[in-house]
Image 1: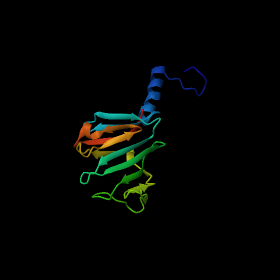
Image 2: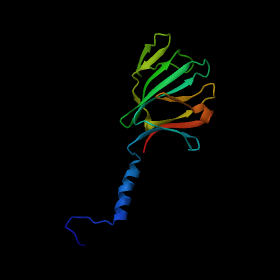
Image 3: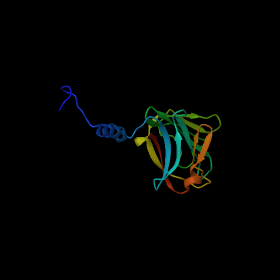
Image 4: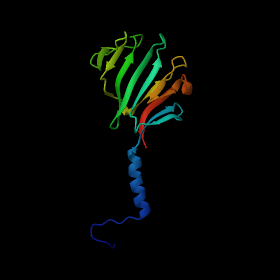
Length: 162
């Protein structure tokens, strides 16, 4: 067999395959991205979270039109829902006791602070509303309208690593 006792000699192609396979099996590279895919799996949006690990998912309430905002951040390798804001507790909106801290926004609206809840599987499905609802993702100074990309469709919003 040759070589020192206890030394394993593998052909270079096999060694590279094993090493690359380990990285692929983990499915997690070094750079985090926020990715939105359509129901057909096509990528609609991909944003690097490396320098800006926070984003907001916003929409206009489908009945009253008030702006509803859910705040997210990447904490280590977990997508976290951190806070939520709404000008009113309209249909489907409100605070669940024990899930974050309810406080006034000093303008007749409400913050739900410190939710700090991990999103299972680092992603979720969303049924995107019409252009009037205008589901959108705000990342830094930029806003991306999911309703323009996929109104009335189901999308997946997730954090991935490449």
